[in-house]
Length: 381
Image (tube, rainbow, N blue to C red):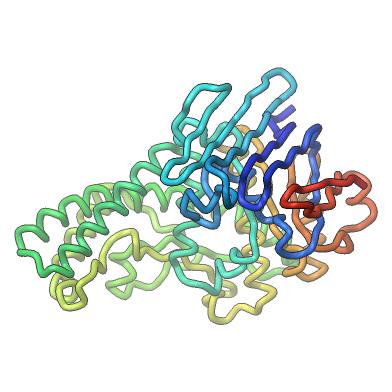
């Protein structure tokens, strides 16, 4: 039996004074009108699994208005072990505990990972590259503590460099910070490219299953030096490079674009501008793909995350679906529902259960949400 959430308890979290759900099974559907707090429940589960929130809130925003401390606690079990994971939040401070002992988020990530799918994720293909890079890094953080460390270090370095460029710092200072950009940036690009190569295998397979057509999805991770030099994206190939090759290419590119960085007062070279590209029949899916094709790629990405986490960690992640059924057509809803097998624990929010077949509802626990003085009441199907 895989590790799964057995119990969820919220106290002073977002709009909930208190919420408790016990004896949680493989499939839970939260039903309620808009603005009732359904998304807050999905966020709470993500906070005690991935140790992050897709909303990227300030810590104080997690605390219910008028209260001093918010708490989210989940009891996990695989039939043999019982693990209590708890997150507390108060202005300026977020803390994690495992069985009562304080833990760093890095020590908890990977215990029970999660994959979250929200309406905003539908911009993964037609939106900016930052969304794709962020999604890949969030996945990497759950698979490897080193990925998160390198990501954080690089973000700090590039912020520092951008500040120096805005202040017209000396060439010596820029040269010095560039050495750090190259060292940390080369490592992050290598981590990402290797991770995306693994994800792409599952992504292409999932897309073929979803689209049920002969069209083939191709994807590539394109480092900044290739994009800036105008190199063609290797359709059907995954760019492969060593850390030393990445360092050499970044150093050369930083020299070439030093003048432009000075003129624009911002950094133009590094993994913060790396690209993730998708192609259908050799054409850029973000430009030429239909809305249906683009949404199929997004859905395939999410299913690929689930499969890769299982492959790498040997643990099925929790799948969190926040009001995405209304954004998908019937065919893609059926594809997603078909993936909800007992080996994957799923939490879904929706305004209506009409998106689900009677067979799905029969095996689900349907929780109807309502408010009474800020306290959520639940009724069960």
